[in-house]
Length: 475
Image (cartoon, rainbow, N blue to C red):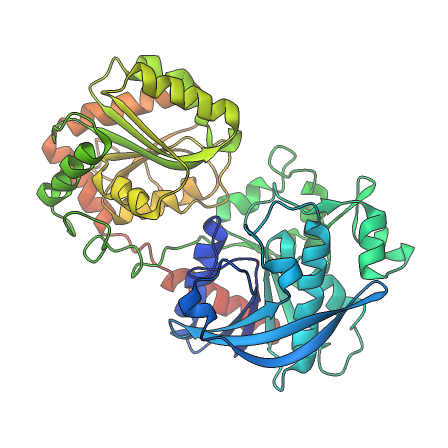
């Protein structure tokens, strides 16, 4: 079976979030099940030179953008056994960042149209075209409208994966109509129209053959008004075509036994894990004491992630014996709140603003507990990475967090973490205190860590689910 992925980012070429981890890891897992995957990605200026320098120009095509015809180079490169097809246009993609520009609509109309041109240019079209998130939502729309009768493209089946429904690619109708050169019928409620504007995300939801999202619980949540981000009506209409498949992590990339960023590599050794804690305390200027429970956070500082609840809880948390280590960036108000907390408790709290891959790995490895109080979480990779590094997650029961973290039960000895239901500071504090109390019992804590070690957090199971979906689509 031949499958193309279309996505706006993928590790190790370009990354801003979990989408890149998924698109980078899932093709490798599918390859082990005899699925031939090609990943179609913009040829960003941020792609590491070692990779970009090996990319070879396969063909030049031209992409129609309204009345304009734009250059597009198709470059090929193999990375870690995965074939990448890079869409080249320096005006759109050779910039300082992946996203955040005033012409996002034009950039990703170009990318979506270029994916179609690449399909037309290839000698062997894929059986399935798997599109990821709003940046590629127009691809199924174009295939099912403009190219519905194309002899080579009409047989391609499409899958559209929602990684986070909150980000929908909403732009003015006039802008998209001009860029796509389509008629008014494309902007009906059954097509791209979205509350008077137009949405890339809705295009994918309406026109893809099958829809997936990144956990079973999130698949149910987004059918409701609370989590549906005004798309719940569309999703309820397509509920029969919607599947939730939980993400995994790349267990080769995230392996505490081989992680070059760690001071001491380990597998299940608590002693070696605590040596990493001592090293991190020294690095961050915190008092060195491997018996002090360390609570780690690596996150975007946004409302979704519950960072405001953490800020509210800090005065109470500082009554407990613990250290809080935080890495991330985001909304200015939340950054200021964390900066003030760090300045008030410099011996108890460390906050590093921005992103640092090595420091993130050391926080996962050194922390005893990992906090994710997300108001909603489509899947979440951080809790899976934490579990991989034998760090016990404390999470809110939402989306993929609910599907991957089971609260420890003192009576049965089952569970790999701690969970709470309501998105409230009070419930979060109660759960943190419960975890801190059980941390003092070495036998109990060892049992929780043993439970974590028994679970496979890799991609093999999820890849089988995707493979099954592909097989159903192509008959």
